[in-house]
Image (cartoon, rainbow, N blue to C red; front, side, top):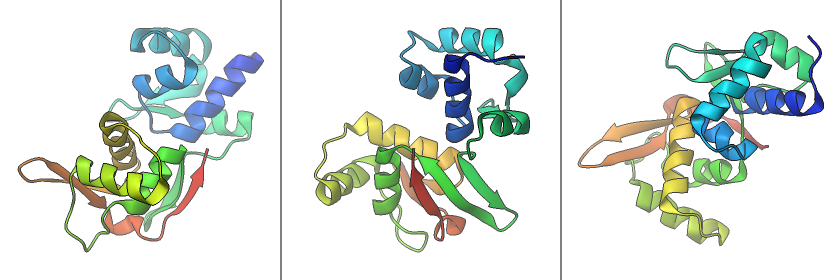
Length: 163
């Protein structure tokens, strides 16, 4: 199957961002909704993606080879060594509590990002960034009165690349 330039670019996004979800691709691709993302995937990229056991979108190994892009997460049985994430996720990962520290709320992480990077993301953007990092296995959630977050034990030696 020959892919158009747009299809190759979007497939590269899936490879870089995996595991990902419809909403993340919807925002990146400028589509109107998750159903439009699903329709695009099924119509244009059905041979190159699958949904993992948690229903997140992942690229097939052939997809990564085809577009020549490194996957969003690299690791082995010892844990994650490299993640490729958007800038806000890299900033969140840098400031979130370490594995031996007390976990912190989304608002706490937001305040740390604002102070460290002189940027002003919204609380929903930080919450989504934490969720994406959790899916990649480098941040964990601790449920107290509210969900709180900290780096996963195997996330301490992770190299972060901004995509």
